[in-house]
Image (cartoon, rainbow, N blue to C red; front, side, top):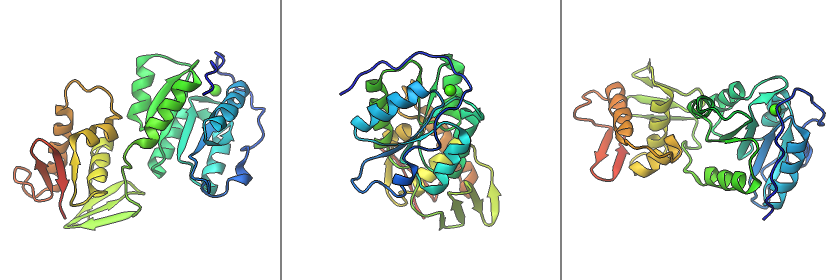
Length: 257
Ligand code: CA
């Protein structure tokens, strides 16, 4: 295992990397089953270190140094994971993370020189799967990447699931009930999507917490119950006596059609 400390450099706005390194070589998912990671990073020193280090660690690396290049990569194929710098020459990584999250199910790890708690919370709130700050060690980054890749998939391969009077559109991230769109918060949608992806199966509280709150230490897991309660108020005829979203006492929840 390589464990090089990556350089500590402030963000700058130069762009010297060629467009999407390796792009033409990785038109489809890696045949050897390696995870494909798109590294969106404009600092050459980081990009070089990551290309080498992550390849040694068994990842296929696709590089982009701007958001424009990243969009180009994404239009050709879907990586398994995105490593996304916050400060990029042509925009904010935070905004681009939101864009990825709104249009795909690909997990994003945000990378930033900033260390303030506010940035961490913002990054996670917009959907980032995890967050690292520069300078970081490759060993730590790889451990986080593998942890993210091990997480349960939130969605199914279906773009739309219909059951009872509900219709869930995973691409547009909308839910309609009897044809009328229901307003769900991001977390409420993610929770419903998680349950819907395992329709008729029990989803444990641990899986809910790991998937939606990324295993962060939640001192109060009543947060989950609060979200379930709000969800019931929006999708159930009788939220106090739910017909779809059933509590399995001491275990978790099950969404029935
Ligand atoms: Ca940068």
